[in-house]
Structures are given as C-alpha cells and as structure tokens.
Length: 567
Image (tube, rainbow, N blue to C red; front, side, top):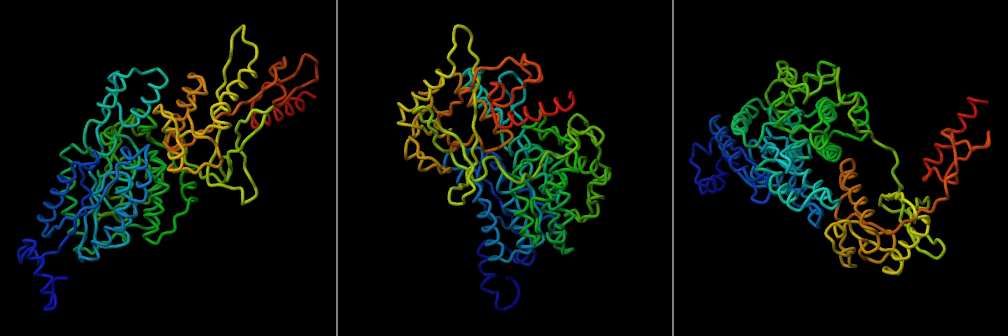
C-alpha cells in the first residue's frame, strides 16, 4: 500500500490524513474501537484506544483508528432488539475484515468489551491472521441493593420478579435500578462479556489481566498501552493468531471455561471463533472437558463474588496455574506475550481461596456443562385438550416430521392446598378453565413481556414475536383468568428458570392458558405405598400421590424393589 512508484496516489491520501512521511514509513496498525455512547461497557473505550495508540507510537508504529458497532445485550433484552444482538457478532467480524483488507494494515489491535463484540472481533482476528492483539474495556464494579449488599444487573431482573411477588416495594426497586450498575464496564458478574474476555486471555490472544482488571482501574490503561507496544513486537517476530490458536489452546479455553463457570453462551461463540481458525470444535469436546474439570469459582449469577473479587484473588493466571497443577492445562502453548502459557502463569498464586477454590476443595468435581442428546418435548407442539367440554392445553411430541416444530415446550404447574371448608378442588380448576374459555373462546395466549407489563397480547404483538405459536389461540390477558397468587408463582418460577436456562424470561416466551390437572382423592398409604390391606400396593396417578409420568414411573420401580426385597 505504501511502497513503489505506483503507490504515490495511496501515499497522497495518507498525507491527506495529516500523516507525516515518518509516520507513513512506519508500520501502520489498525485500531478497531467499539466505543459507544449507547453501551455502558463501551462508553470509556475512547480512553482505552488513546492508551493503545500511545503504546503503538512508543514502540515505533503509526496507529489509525476505525469504529465497530456494539449492542448492549442488557438494553436490547425483552423487546425486538433481541433479534439483532446475535447477528451483530457476524456483522462485526465482517466489517473488521472489510476494513483491514481494504486498507492493508500491517497489524491490528481489537478493542471490544460486551457480549457480541468480543467473539465478533476474535472471529475477524482468525480470518485475517495479521499480527494482532485484543484488549477489552474491563468489567464493571458491582453496585448496591437497597439492603446495602452488592448487586449487579441480574439483581435488577430478579428484583422485578420480587416486586411482582410482593417481596419488594416500588421504592426498593427504584433504588435497585439506580444503584446496581454504578458505571462503565461490562456487567460485574461472569456473564457472556466477561466470560469471553477471560477466555481471550486464556487462549493467549490477550495479555494477562485482560479478563479481570476493572474498567475504572488505571491498570486497565496500562494494559492498553502494553497491548499497543506488544502488537509491534508481534509484527517484528511475525507471530500471528493462527500460531497461537491451536487445538491445545482450544482445550485450555474450554477447561478454564468449566473451572470459572462461564456463561453457557461460550458454547455458542467458541466453535464460531475456532471455526474461523479452521478448527472443527463440536459439542463433544465441551462434554468431555466438563467431565474432568473441577469448578473452582462461583461468580455472579452463580454465587456471591464478582469480577473484581476474581481479579483480587489472582485472576485468570491463578486459576490456570491451579488447573496446571492437576495436569489439566497445556502449558506449552504460545501467547501474545511471546512466552508460553507455562511461563506466563508460573508465579501466579491463589490469594483468596474463598473466591478461587483449590483442586482439593472444588465447588463441584466437574464443570457443570453436559451436552444432552435429546430435549424436553423434542420437536413438540402445544395442543388442545377437551375435558367434559372445557378446552385446555397440553404439550405433545410427534414422530411425524410434518407435525414437528422447533419450539421447546414445558408446563408450569402450581399446586394449591385449600383448608376447610373447601372440598371441591377439581371444580375450582374447572371454573378457571371455563373463565379462560369465556374470555378467549378457548385457549388464551400471551407473551411473557406483555404479562409482566400488565398489558394484554394482541394479534400484532404475537405476529411480531420471535417465537411462532404452535397452536391457534386467542391473544389476551391471563391475569384476567388466573388468581394473582398462582400467576405470581408462575412469574417467579420463570425468572428462577431463566438463571439455569437463559432466555426463558424472554419477552417473546409464549404462555398458553390454562392447563388444569384433575386428580383422584388420595388413597391412605404407608411410606412404601402399601394400603391398609397387607400386600396391596397402589402406584401411579391413580393413587392420588403422584402427579406426573416420571413420578408414576418412579413409584412403580420403588414398589417393585420393595416387594422383591421383602418377598
């Protein structure tokens, strides 16, 4: 781009940028900056970029900065913005590639921070395979709840459910939303952004400290300067991303993923990143690594600790050194430091065993991720049921491909125990189902987002929903049908389920109502399901004891074993 007679027009345009001949003659390093006034994790990246550029200049290079977009997954959640978050990852990768190839940079420094910018930039880094380094903006500090305890973004989501359930006042919710996220940085817990920033450090394409140094610390600016200096050394040594990202570094990343208890979204992003490095990473490796890797950290939302606690406890290097002690880390992998993983971590120590557990005292003996073959209601659908003329709903799984869908279906059953003089529980259930039929002409369907906002779903809102209904039902308002206590229990359960199955509390989750279960009166049984008549046992739902297929099956197994053992 710069040398030879034919490149005079190119140099003329570089002069138009205000560059001197000396600057043009030096290696030109592209600085990809995802700074934004929209994303809290990115609002300070202008300072990170300036520090990176200072480092490049100190090491003899010329930095040229260009932008990348960024979506805040927190702000984009629970409305149509969710449709654009994941696609932004690939757009970021494509735009970085376009800019780098179009302008023939000698090297690159990538500055991401939040959810999709990190994997997007890492994907571009693999594609381009130029001397490159990544330096993120760092995690946010935790905020505070109304009771003075630490809080973060997930605390606010939980507080919404708490308010709906009557456990939190409107004033306490207001205080929570104002104080939970105190400033710049990626959300304070081990969510997707911080997970990916930690794994970038683990893979070896970012300097030690990238994953954990808080956004507001001056150490973050020093890290950015060192990253700018380091990319120049990578250029001189001709060390490229594909020299660093190998099968061994992949295994290191997944091992640390399991040890840290990272976001399950890493299972989505890591194969995409490593795929750009021509490494075929399937789900089996996550399962295999998880089974042999102990979980050493419980950071929010899994536990009480935050990223700052992990940093103070020794950071990623301490975690990796502890894993290496058990032979779980490949220590011979090259990193952007120019040294191996083993050389980088050899002096790292765990400074707080409450935050980073030892191999001898893990939270669990495995990483907690198992790849399941199958699913709840695989390729199933929500269907109508007719009970004595009352229309209710249920979920079915179909073998016929023509009847299969892409939705996952589950039921939330709320049990109510009534005191005297109430006696007709089945009649009570029927009355709720009849009310649903009266208001909806059958089954009512409502978006979860509409329910928690106190508004009915309309045909237009259902049509624009991310999830396509499998049953023709009437859009409406379930709060007009179901008693408040039951509805509060359902809402609370959905928020609780969202912790282990992220996305359950999505605005577009569809609720069908109602399903009513009718059970027989309970038979008088002992603890072994035996009646007052010796040798007569009652199993399954007919006893009134079990209320599901799994419970019914288990009761049969239990009684069979009891009879065999006492025959």
